Amino acid sequence: MSDGPTYGFDTLQIHAGARPDPATGARQTPIYQTTAYVFRDAEHAAALFNLQEVGYIYSRLTNPTVAVLQERIATLEGGVGAVCCSSGHAAQIMALFPLMAPGCNVVASTRLYGGTVTQFSQTIKRFGWEAKFVDTDDLAAVEAAIDENTRAVFCESIANPGGYITDLDAISAISDKAGVPLIVDNTSATPYLCSPIKHGATLVVHSTTKYLTGNGTVMGGCVVDSGKFDWAASDKFPSLSAPEPAYHGLKFAETFGPLAFTFHSIAIGLRDLGMTMNPQAAHYTLMGIETLSLRMERHVENARKVATWLENDDRVEYVTYAGLDSSPYKAREAQICPKGAGGLFTFAIRGGYDACVKLVDSLEIFSHVANLGDTRSLIIHSASTTHRQLSPEQQEAAGAGPNVVRVSIGIENAEDLIADLDQALSKATA
Image 1 (cartoon, rainbow, N blue to C red):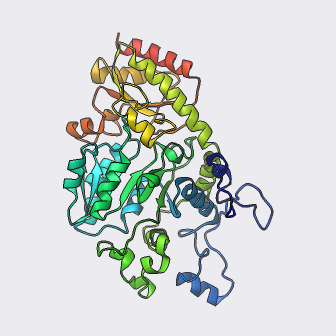
Image 2: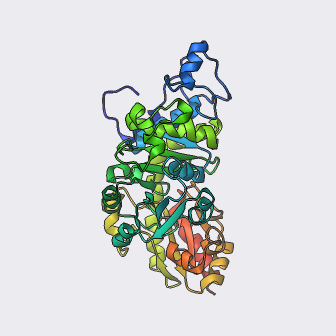
Image 3: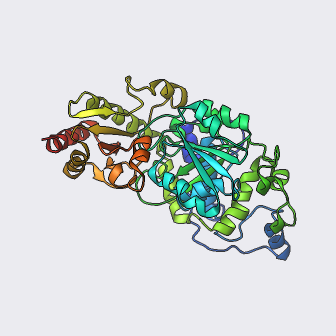
């Protein structure tokens, strides 16, 4: 879209990054199912490979369909650029890759998706990186965990599975003081409900598999660059501030300014890690984003109704939905997520582990799957699935104890969802 008027979210989710195809006039973004692109001449090819000109070389790096998606997500998040990749887990590695080195650490919230906890506590050790887990509600603990080897702070805007809302303003103030970037996973909130960059985030990551696509069809991830961090302010980030041998001593921060992280992630991250998003996945995600605001409004509306009903049911011990008046996170809803607390939360059942299993097996409308953010309502018992690899202490810290189930409330009729939960709870607690 051209520079000029400031468009609203509903307009941008349909039009940002997209233009009629110049060759055919096609209004929907075409799927550019190609691996490579013809250069105009040898000089053009050399300029592209030297990063002297922006263009398409090879679809591991850039692809026109994926480029539209990158621009659209960056626009909705208020960033200067974005890089899409093969999954949400790939996006997390892509976000850390230019920042970390052997011996460095990331300070991470204890309230994270179980797969992220495993990735950070186990897998990144193979790179010589370390994760230091802290409760992000304990601001003193966050500040104390940051040391001279810390290269980032990582949290979720709305934590999976509990639906807890993070005080991004307070966390970003701590990371700013320490001179390290704040990385916020905005998957559960989406840019419609939360704008992490406005609250101080340096980078925003997404599993586009979830709400952005919204229909459970394709995998994907994205890293959005705020363009606001000065990578050359210290010697902590040499990948971005120091000469890059692979590009004849080019300094990304000096050459690309606010887009340094974005260009590094494409020119080196995707080049060498190869965690590329395919154009068909980008196409499906673009179509999903066109209805993002409409879907999120219904997700929030339904989640409020279902959570309120559950909170008032004697068979339920507690509900973690931040949109409830009883939630300790209710004030943060207005501060961080003014349009609503999303569609993800947990609730605990009287009867513990066995009752949770019976509940999951007794539901008819809810689908028992390891996913969230679908138009369909989904449920999972985290302790026996997504958080199974964690210790009991880690499960409790993440809000995934043995008596807890996670629900992702879809856009069906709320009364039907409540009736389904009612009959399943009767069987589970009989």
